[in-house]
Length: 513
Image (tube, rainbow, N blue to C red):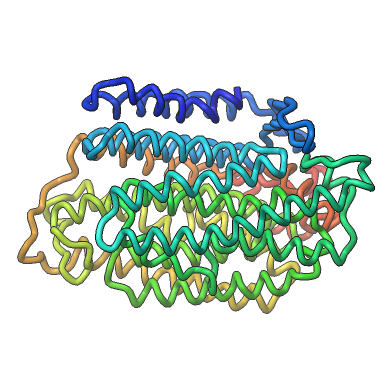
């Protein structure tokens, strides 16, 4: 099943070259819909006990180099695969309704990008992960460079330079890991499962950890290595921006849990404070910048930097609660960012601008759109009762267990999120109606794409345990090397009397006070 999930999108894109231009979008949508159906079946058939890999594919690929075609899914990647399939299906449908220029090339690039992203989430061979990780750059280079707006060439070059440097360093680090481990293992292998069983000496772990971390931090993006973000978000087509902001950054965060923690545990512990400081700096910087922007794209862009900062500190809290919170927050953020960008596209079409100073009054003539937008906004600021609140709760709980000062500073980001999220909603929906306003309600074609995403946000808010019950064991297994007992303390678990709602059960019921 995993092989089909990964390669159906690009196969549909290739077949689309043989089809008339007017139907190629719908064919690509069918391909992404099939991949989504398989992802849903994968979740339905997943066994949440044990945290081990399931549906494993393991075939010889390049035996001379010790490279195998290994795919597998566990609680870390399960819902990220589902998120990827869901957002690509929504984006492909939205694009099919818009009839982009050079449709065959456009939908092929979408399919190739989906295949690369799914492959990165499912790869269990280190070199295979790196290849899928790098492959993601190619389709987004063309999607932004050919179908973008404004100074798209400059934005594309800037993004590629940043991300390619990180990717090349990661390739060097992956090869070094396999070669330096060869004597202990008895041969060169890139299998993540084997490499985690025989850690490298501490000195080697340090510099290899630095290379992997730089690649992941650039992709997330994090403070100090985010220089490509503003230009890329301005130039990127809004449907593609759903994927860039909603999914690609999660591949980097996932890489920390999948590769860095289990394979380089000593380095993760050694550099814990450095990564926590980078995460907190991302939270504060992203929140302040989001509040100071008037372009709705950049508000969401900088808010994403802040949210990825929360995910970073959750991972490097090195606690079970923080890791669980990071996994659920990756999914939450992707689900929230997607409808935000699609609603921005609707607002831009109505008003002819993406500047919140020139918007306003939409709620008077589009109440349904306003209701959908307020649900998404409340999730963005992590209001209690939303799934984002649960994710941030677990992250801060995990950080408080290990680094109280970091947790207190990071908490400031929660208050700042309320400022920029409510400001964005107020300026677009309830300000005085703009002179250029052509207000009308959300159309059926737009609602077909936006409404299911909003319903997913509401559904996950009602039952976030859908993710935590399936991901907890995998998170604990990933953190086992850096923390022999990543489970939260029983007294902390007793304080969380909403365990049944979240599905988070750090201690057995009979052990609870």
